[in-house]
Image (tube, rainbow, N blue to C red; front, side):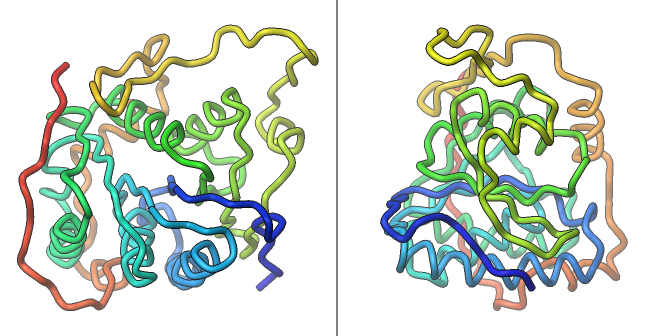
Length: 256
């Protein structure tokens, strides 16, 4: 494993969000590595960078692992869910873990839609980015889709995400210019006003405005969320081994 560099110790990030690929896009060794590193990252962010709140979109795999790591670090957990009944089609172990962690959140989750749609996934990611002081991204180099779109959005907001690279087994914070080079984004002229920045829903209203039609990659991921049922044999390698606590709370759906 390469040395973790999350930034200078004096940087303070009270609220930290994570966005990442669903577990089925990661090879089993990468899943184990990401899971382990998130547990360590939550402790380091709490002790070194003053994290007091962790935000998760509860993606199967990294989203669940991050939520669990936040609670294990005894940090406040808050959830943004892209749609109601997010875990209905998941394997039993992952669905049980989702229910357990929803029950451990400090407040009712913010929900951005009733069904999986590209716009609700986008709105959820944008809200996570806008609400956080620091963003962690589990991203496979070169991969397209919702995670890449979220990083692009973060860059338009002047954010500098921490990259958890499952392929390179590395956690680091590339400079904004390096992120822009990865995504072939032209840097903005110094002193010029930002134009064309994507608009997002407010976490208070949940009415997403994505600034255009959803991309093909976003549609594909939404279809995957609606239709994909993973092999049950894989379920135990994705869910945490924590005992299931059958408690849940009412989810608050935003209008629109």
